[in-house]
Amino acid sequence: MMKNLFLRGLLLIGLTFTSVAGAQLRVETAGVGANQIPIAIAGFTDETIAPQQVTAIIKADLARSGFFKIIDTGNAMSETSPVDFNQWKAQGADALVVGSVQRLADGRFDVRYRLYDTVKAASLSGFGQAAGADRIRVAAHRIADDIYEKLIGVRGAFATRIAYVTKVGNEYRLEVSDSDGEDRQVALRSNEPIISPSWSPDGTKVAYVSFEAKKPVVYVQNLVTRQRTVVANYKGSNSAPSWSPDGTKLAVALSRDGLTQVYVVNADGSGLRRVSNSSGIDTEPQFSADGQNIYFTSDRSGGPQIYRMPANGGDAQRVTYNGSYNISPRVSPDGKSLAYISRRDGRFQLYILDLGNGQELRLSDTAKDESPSFSPNGKYVMYATESGRRGTLAVVSVDGRVRHSLTTQAGDIREPTWGPFMK
Image (cartoon, rainbow, N blue to C red; front, side, top):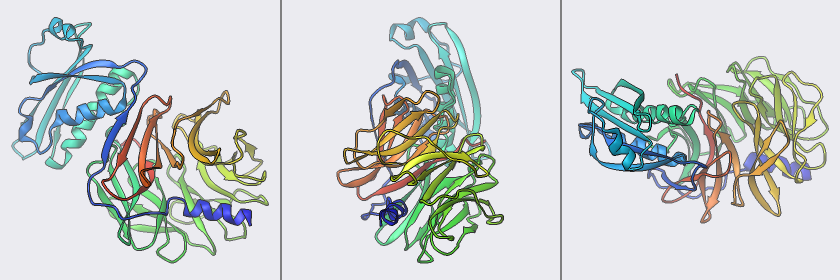
């Protein structure tokens, strides 16, 4: 009975929805990074001709990261404007961002920017990019990414996408948006639940579980063509898809042979093979960053814990030991950390484990967390939780210092997955 309840809980996690409004997500940020960099961001000259204000998007991105203190300049400056570095240093700015927006003959917009180090009185970076009216937000996110990388030393992830599940009335939706929740697009609508979305490494596809056949079936959907492929539709439960780093395979959890076990299947649904073989329930598989191992949840020790085994199958090693209930493993992009949900004192909370030294850190202070997902630069973890009895998405830095939430005005939002860097 315990095993059945455990499996049912994993399958149905995140399926308690209420109606959700069609409004965009709202972002609320709390906490700051260890050392905030004071940065002045001037208004880009002529940016009002574009459908979105570039500087507003850049400011919101950098502020949300927690690593920057935004200094409002109160005026516009182009990338060719002369710069009085002493003036900006006097205002407390260590860095300055300037730029411009111009309309091109083909109707697109030429977005140019430059980043200055005011302390060293030097230019750090700058570039121009042509963007259609529907790509202004992406252009602004790319500028924020470049600023983040030049000043923090880590690639920015503002220009990436996220996917998640909402419910409107009796309709479930798999939605895709910018990392800040803007520019939402519906990838799938269904009258039956959708769970466990997972991005392909190239960002062109999403695997997920849909109940539209009145049972859980694993699909892969091309986000460009919307073509869908059935990857796993066997007797019993088909669940928890996770991509291999090279994008050629998926790890899935199937109950076709009795108890749920871990299988690997080609992305087109061919070549199914079983890789776990235990007397318990093995589920929620996740490939390691190098593709050599699979992390998964198993109750073989009596309660759900996280294990690691070779990707081709073999002896499994237990990874989590603190707490009696640990589920939903997610491996960081560099393979050094593991995020997961742990139940302690009746609270389901997000934890991160250093796989090298075994040190554990609790990242959330909520009580109903689920579905963690690392940002592609490994600096943040997105997860689903509850606020005011409604499902929300939360993001926390891996050191726990910076938090922000993405909420709708009404209803629940669940099952987040953070997409990869796009080329």
